Image (cartoon, rainbow, N blue to C red; front, side, top):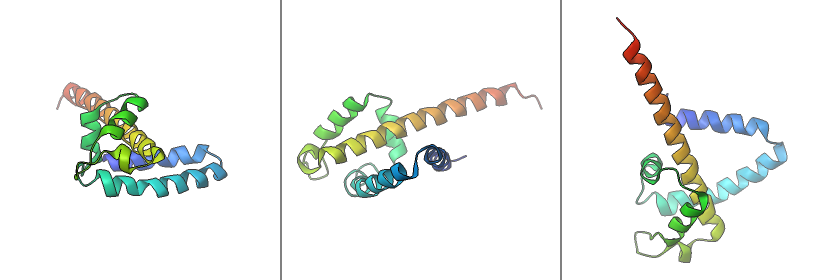
Length: 120
């Protein structure tokens, strides 16, 4: 199963447990901030899964500070060109991607282990 399908399933499951009012508010925040990834991050980090793999699991504060000090392709610090809420959104996005990458890697290892034990 591809990582995108896993992400879609997880997001779908999460939305079932939240009240509808919160869903609408959260979706509007995601819609407003998701362009930050497309406009700022994706130009250098084309695949977020690779960024998540490189980053690994860190604290949200660590990722916030890292994004804040990170520079774009013109050499400007994101702390100077993005709002704190946009930086927070990106740091949470990378953190979630890192956890999903770890989950997918662990599941793949478990599957490989099972495949080794199957005798044909």
